[in-house]
Image 1 (cartoon, rainbow, N blue to C red):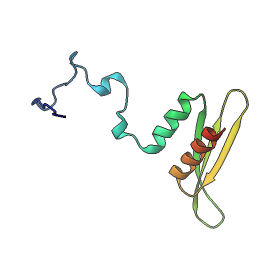
Image 2 (image 1 turned 90 degrees about the vertical axis):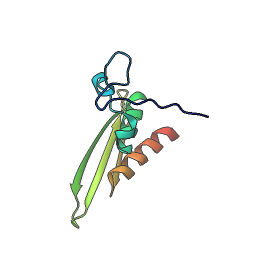
Image 3 (image 1 turned 120 degrees about the vertical axis):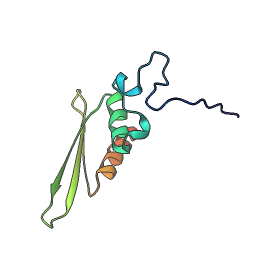
Image 4 (image 1 turned 90 degrees about the horizontal axis):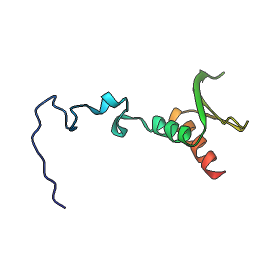
Length: 96
């Protein structure tokens, strides 16, 4: 496959209308953290996702992720890392 590149002035738009990707209000996937991608996927599947960090009795930071639907289904996951909590929530929902 041959790719053709063209030079674009610094700050110039590559979109025909002159708009930029950020003017559409979207964050490009290559700038998102994986946890944001998981949250977007769950949202598209009809789940609402929330998370919080806390310190346990031994002084360690823990992450708690909570996913719920409007039909009353709910899933709560506790993990030592934010990304692990998100992946656990996503995998548990996809298994159902």
